[in-house]
Image (cartoon, rainbow, N blue to C red; front, top):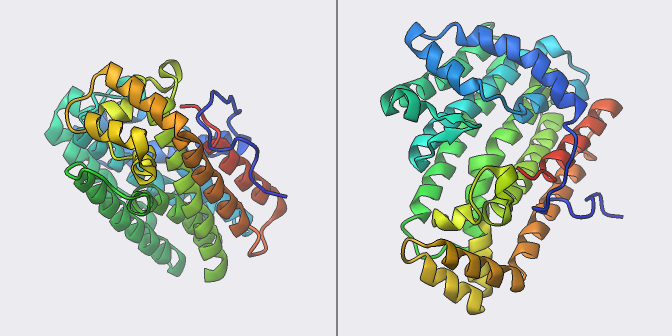
Amino acid sequence: MSLVPQGAGRAHSVQVPVPRALARASSLLVPALLAAIDRLDPSLQGPVRHHLAGGGKHVRAGLVLVGAAAVGGRDEEAVPGAVAVELVHNYSLLHDDIIDRDRERRHLPAVWAQFGEGVAIVAGDALSALATKVLLDTPTSRSVEAARRLADANFQMISGQSADMAFEARTQVSVEECLAMERAKTGALLSAACAIGAVLGGADGRAADALGTYGEHLGIAFQAVDDLLGVWGDPSTTGKPVGADLLARKKALPVAVAFERGGEAAEELAAILSHAPEAGDVARATLLMERAGVRDAVAAIADEHLHEALEALERVHLEAKPKEELVEIARYVTARDR
């Protein structure tokens, strides 16, 4: 029997309650995160607090804490890792908003739009540096290994972002290239979050790597769902226009799948991506892509990687309750509608 719930990863309006593990993680994370922000230069604290005021589900921080618990670790051992991962995630968001020219983040003005591009760039740099400081405040073999894994994830994220930007100048990208980009840009930090939790919780390399594999595949499934929402998401829940990724001419997974399949949908996409598309162009292309099975194909990719993520949890011994929480988190992030 498949471990993947029916319809997982599909961009329909599925209302899934926020897992208790994530709510609990937020309650542990937020005070420690705000204390870390107090260490920034005073000129940066306001912009960063503005950015964080939009909230968030703290999935990555939750994975650190649950990952530690899964190997028998304690919350206090894992909180610095949760803060560090959250700092890296938010630095990437500050920079992404500038790159994508997104003026809003979580229903608030983006930092670059509110305070200026220079402030947003430096604030992002500061969060990245602070993440390492938080991990290495008390240097131990565990914290050094956690910092190594976080640095590697950061390096991969930057590589993935660079590839994503390079795609903009290309007419087409393959599904393989798109998945490799998403593995680096999204999967790397989710993988590191899980592995860092295990490392700080005292696990050996085998258990940390298994949890890292879970996080990597979860990241790809998460991004595949995000790509579905970028084309077929409901504007009332995503906060973005219908076909937002097509309007932005992004070479996301649905576009790569459509080009690989060829036919009328691929021809239509090539035509609209050759110029600034209008709403009518996007509506026609979206309909043709759905008829060509692109939506179902991307959902199947999400399902496949969700399955791989859950399979990775079976490779090592994990504590029963945290293991169940990891499964719940995986199903939650791949059944979201926003």
